[in-house]
Length: 167
Image 1 (cartoon, rainbow, N blue to C red):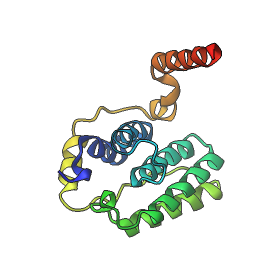
Image 2: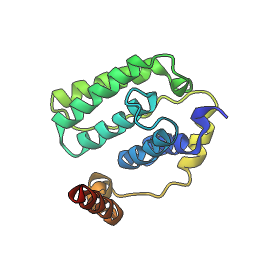
Image 3: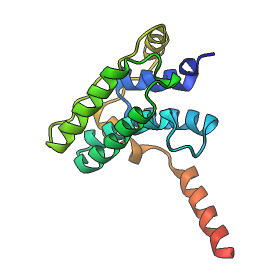
C-alpha cells in the first residue's frame, strides 16, 4: 500500500479539505507519524502536521505562533522534497500556499483556509471520506482544543509528575 493511502493520511486530507478541522488534522497525522517514525522531527509527515497546526493558530488569531510553525512546515517541505509522502500532492502548489500563509500571518491578514493540492487517485479516497465527516460550527473549530475531553492527557501528566517526584 502506498503510504498516502493509509487511512490516517486520508483522514488528514479529508479534515483539511473537507470541514477544515485543522486540530483533527494534527491529531490523526500525529498518530500516523508516531506509528511509523516516532521522534523523527524531520519526517515529511511532521511538515504536514505543522501546516495544520499553523493554520489552527492563525484561525485563532495567534499570528506569531502561526507564522513560526508555518515557517517550520515550509522548511520541512523543502528538506523532504521528493518524498513519497508528497507524491500525490502538487508539491509546488503546496509550497506557494504555505508561503502565502506565512506572508498573511506576518502581515496580520485575516485567516483564510486553502485546500491541499491533492492529485492522482488519492483524490477519490479523500472525497469519499469528506462525505462522511460531521459538520462542525466555526466556533467549535476555533476552540476545539479547549472543548475536547482531556482527562486522559491530564492523568498521564499527573502520573509522569508522580514518577519523577519518586526518583
